[in-house]
Image (cartoon, rainbow, N blue to C red; front, side, top):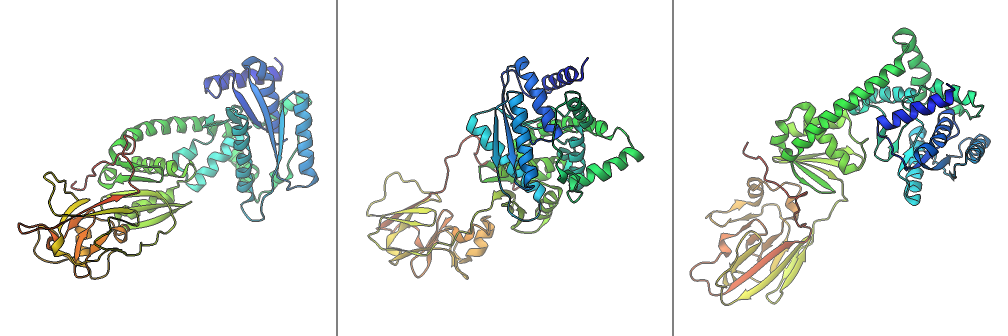
Length: 477
């Protein structure tokens, strides 16, 4: 059987077995002009009629190698014409600086994503093969990416497909030689200043000579095992997440620390990884050092927070762990003066309403956000402000002053939230810690004749839905 027919049958079988794409799919092919991507272009173009595929090739010209880059683009253009595959060529420029390899990859995928969305295609298809899989697994192992990293490149990950993972590079170059199809060699592929190239040209030949001549095939088989093992773990973690997660919002996820501590170390790792990657939108944003840093945070005393990088923070407040997208520092609101005739006021994220009454409603609701005070016990004007050093008040139900700091600690108000809790005072005393506790000195008694009704609403509060409803934590466990 000719090599092309064998390769087509092999790829078609792999695509079906791994459910990479179905008949009728619209595929965006990433074609650099190198041997791997040219082989991808050839094979997918021949598979097109068998699987009723719609194809579009994209070539990204980084303009880093002058005439060489232009020659790459010209070759891709000619090959696409010969194979009747539409082509888009995009020129990009990279700013000077380090980490060129990674930044170039990110720029390419940014272009691929833009084209995919603009033309409403289904999948981005790349030409990664077994040797790429091996290099990726080793890079991930060395940087501590865990089981997910050892699973390497998946046959399909989101909207990115890799139908050539079943091929060795030698098979692909032999196919092109048989078909007399040219390709371009990028001189930078020999530059061992790039980590992947050092693994390719130095480490892997040494391993193949000294340890295992089938290293690429062996690691490719292991990748599939690791991927299967991780899938089992993720199913377990999905079940655990319902018990551990108290609240899940686009910008913040809150976990019960007691429930998290009951999980095994491996379960903790994957729970944190899944949540952090969900916040950041990338599966690349969690490493072993992040996990160890969070464990250290959980073991620390009091309320603390740490930076996780990439705009993420982890914050421990009593029995809760919050994973959050970092926001710009919010200034503490300025004090607001309330005169007797003022009916409404906004302080920070809180909106207040004030109503003087001569008669109490027969049915009145009184809770932490809705209070009735004795108007004759107040001195006007009132002030809405943040806490101050030395603040004391007399919580309703007590007959002695307590430090506001101690009250916040006992009420488990996180130290990062305390500056934003509204404090109402009348110039002589605190009358209400809004949303928390009324001061006994302003409370109604049997002699009260005039009344002040105050209510407060948090403007940032969201309606609770099933997917984001905050549950009660396990503080007593």
